[in-house]
Amino acid sequence: MADCIFCKIAAKEIPSTVVYEDEQVLSFKDLEPQAPFHALVIPKRHVESVGALTAEDKDVIGHIMCEVIPAIARDNKLDKGFRVVANTGDEGGQTVKHLHFHVLGGRSMQWPPG
Ligand code: AMP
Ligand code: ZN
Image (cartoon, rainbow, N blue to C red; front, side, top):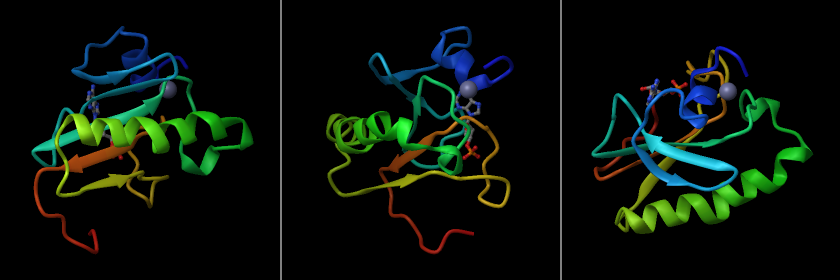
């Protein structure tokens, strides 16, 4: 999608520090890490948010949840735990309107979030 920063990262038009990549999915380090480990996981195909997902996205979201995120956690030794967050829409705190899952780890997390 034109003018989408994460589409540009997926297309390698904007550099990122890649954590994981396959045909459908890219994971890269967050520019402003909120934890010792902070990566974003995106489907390469543009979809705005969790709120915009449809049945067509089942395979890629299943792949992200069931394979990609567990592999990232294993590879980065997040064995004590980690947090997966998908900020959704303006009140959900989503600033980049291309679906992304934050994977945060390496410190204790507080709940509830602000
Ligand atoms: P959200 O507020 O949930 O939409 O998260 C967007 C995240 O994208 C923030 O944590 C930003 O730090 C991160 N971010 C924005 N631009 C970049 C970029 N070029 N490379 C890596 N992370 C980015
Ligand atoms: Zn996009």
